[in-house]
Length: 228
Ligand code: ADP
Ligand code: ADP
Image (tube, rainbow, N blue to C red; front, side, top):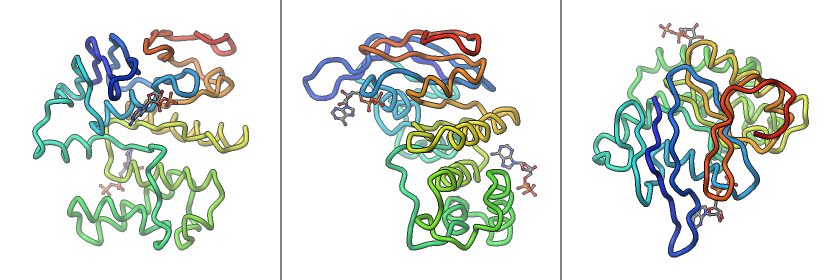
């Protein structure tokens, strides 16, 4: 479903943020992207989402070369990917429910179908009863739940999230991770970037470790072991 072939990413004339990155992710996998702050985790996710293009090499998503996609094909790829990125702001002049409804309205669903789907999404992330609150009235964990609901409401086959538990306490972080796990179990390929080793240790999942421009494939790992 995702393939990186000899991918380099260099900003300006600086050092390579990513250098000769090669890996593949199959449909249905649950993968952590780990590594210290500034390692290139966000860059990796943005290349997958088509929000940035590689300096060299090829990024394939669903068999399509993301870096070379014609402008008219981009919206279709974006719809197949649910993103929870760090700069993905929730709209504070609207209710939680309207935040989830918006992506459906954009993709042309009828009002009735959109409302039904938004309800299902809100229920799945555990936000039922909080539909009428504004994002800023929600706790940090509930804001992440809302961002997840908005990301999955169009039923993407791929879900990518950048540090979705960064500002949460440990229990809340684990509850958010469990929501991603549930979506993965229902068939959605899921990538979670995090520098939180304790979060990763709770799951026997594959880890891609990013550091110094390189990506080391940790493969499947045993819970409780140290960094790959
Ligand atoms: P992480 O998500 O692991 O914290 P990032 O992917 O955000 O790492 O950043 C990796 C490196 O690339 C950092 O040194 C950062 O300064 C640099 N970088 C990221 N985005 C840009 C950009 N748009 N312009 C210039 N440098 C950038
Ligand atoms: P319909 O529009 O056909 O009535 P629903 O919106 O009620 O469909 O959703 C059907 C089922 O799909 C529900 O059980 C819902 O939880 C599930 N579902 C919705 N979105 C996703 C998603 N992104 N990934 C996996 N399952 C989803």
